[in-house]
Length: 573
Image (spheres, helix red, strand yellow):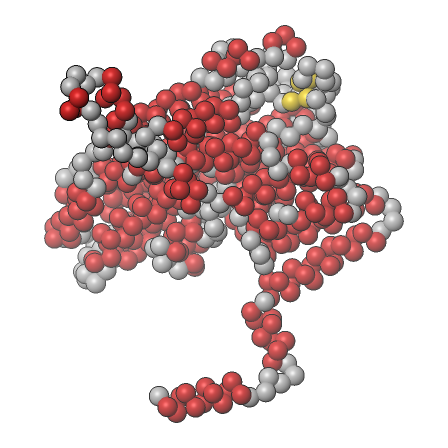
């Protein structure tokens, strides 16, 4: 030990040498150095005198893409590049850039995210998970049936609760049950089974979060980017309200879940369940899940009240406004004949009502007994009690920096029309895509989105890609200008289907962080899931979404707010 310490001290005193410092910098700071070099190359476009404003925006855009792809700093910090660069280089004024950082959809990111934490706050998510995992007798704990229960638990709970906390809780139960069985021989490969199950939980959780608008960050971001008007005093119809969006997303995601569960069942059968499980191992699994269920104790009033309010919240979201049915409780604030497809009361308003209410009301609602008790001794104790939705909990589980990524994409999109960059898109490859049949063009959009979402975070990929695709659709040929909402769906959902790499704020991060699955294995398990979901998304945008949103194929265009001007209708195909 003493000899080792002496040699270590000798190495520390040794001179670095000519190349030692450089090698050390390349080894430890390669992300920052590579990003710096690439950004300098991108900024070379500023030296071109022709089309200066357009080239400046392209250089800023590429710098943001490089930083978000290589990630030398947090994604939120990279998202600030267009916020400071566009005003400094004359692309957009500061008011326009900073105005992109807050709007109704970005407020929905905060408020909807807090409402998603309602079940996590009271522990109801863990109770539902235990109810599903503990269902059935001993025969329900075979590898294939356990896979089915894990997928169902992750999918169902992530649709109505915060998906990262849900994924972490379910994985914890599965790991605690399978970890003691790793040393068992001549049975199923429990280590491989644990890896596959945790990966399946992450995929199912991500798919479940796409069922409703506020469940996934990428779905909220696509709605924010789509709603960004290109003409002043205009607004796109609210086609991505809860009812319309879920009517498309829910059946689409269900198909993805079924196909992925079948694929993961094949993985379990081939890699983990070549040999059958013994009765003793099955009993240990059952006991482990039953212990977790027992530790939760009896149902609490907080859980019951939270579940009741969740049902009420979802009912209010779904009945707020529907252009299909020309109904909704928010129609009293409809613009009327001037803009019949627009509504002044949006989802963020609905969410704000319940966020305030849930913070005001105490979690046990004991104050209601004041009006029902008959004797003074039956009055509830007068003590301070936390709200149904506890502020410290939601504050701790909210990453506020992500709203900057929303704003970055919107700033780039505004800059495209400010500099008239969209006018050059048709001759720069845009017509090559929009000139194809709809099936071929939208396939390229979905393919690029899924690939980008697999090599960088979904929100970052969307912030970089969505402005280009929406501008291309606006200036495209044939049906593309009227199907701008379908292009937004292809990019928004496609960038959210990156299952392969453990990026932050995705369920896949817990596959390596919590389950300790090797990156190589995670990619091997997940790449087929991304391909399956990509094909299903493409088919749904070809055959289902056009019929759902625009059955008469008239196109969806902006409408003028009172006193505004509408954009012209898209040309007939």
